[in-house]
Figure 1 (tube, rainbow, N blue to C red):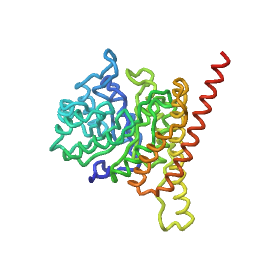
Figure 2: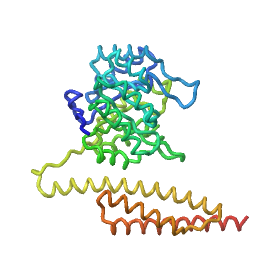
Figure 3: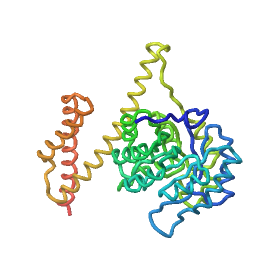
Figure 4: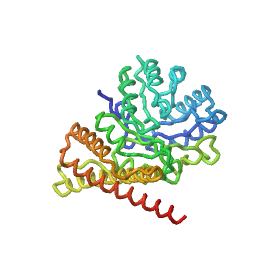
Length: 366
């Protein structure tokens, strides 16, 4: 698949692209106030706002609907910012196009449903309006790729992915776990596809947005979508994760942007650039190992409660076979991957054993 670069559908673009605006369009005054404040931040090129809000439970604020599209159009006329809204149905697409919205995004609750994505894709045929696809709420790379492919098959080549993190049953530091390896793998599997990070939905806390934004730049993402509101504490939805325009300016201005090295910089400079890339990948590997060990601990607790041994040979053999098959597809040496997973498995069994011994000690002391 071929994708049109961001600078081909967003004129005079500098990295990173910054998309900003409130979680939800609430009033015309709120939209216009936000847009005029964002216009003064050089890197902000697109005004975003939720018009139709898919919420977990009924009875909560679900957006003001179509009338907000007129507010977005007015904001564009007054500030020159491009506009962007979420669509979840063909009728949303029709209304957004009617009001001249420049860019549409498909949300995480929609991208998880191939039927819904296909209906949207069918409604987009013949338009080639830029589309951004958020990752599904569950950590499924194939599902994310499938949504992007369905939109691309409808004739859309102005496409971008939005990494907004993944829902988990535990209570991590962030609202949605970033699992950075997944968007990185997406970039490898779909070369040329721009990937934008949504730090607001990953963090769930405005105090963590700068940290997540920097991480996104460190793994070479193309831009940021950050929820911005004139008075975040009074926002009608997701108040905790929205920032003021002033805070957004500080976050963007504080980013450390790393550029690709040039052959003209000499050997030492090139080597440092490559080592920096290794450091980034290693950080992701370590985060993944930590997440894996947390799951292992839960398995150990479950086994202890059900009197199941930590060492299960058949499971190990099955796991090793599947991992080696994946390694082969990726072009990795079998011996290399086998040795790594043998070490991982030994540590997993050891940790499960420790947990089971603790359970047994606690039981005996009761």
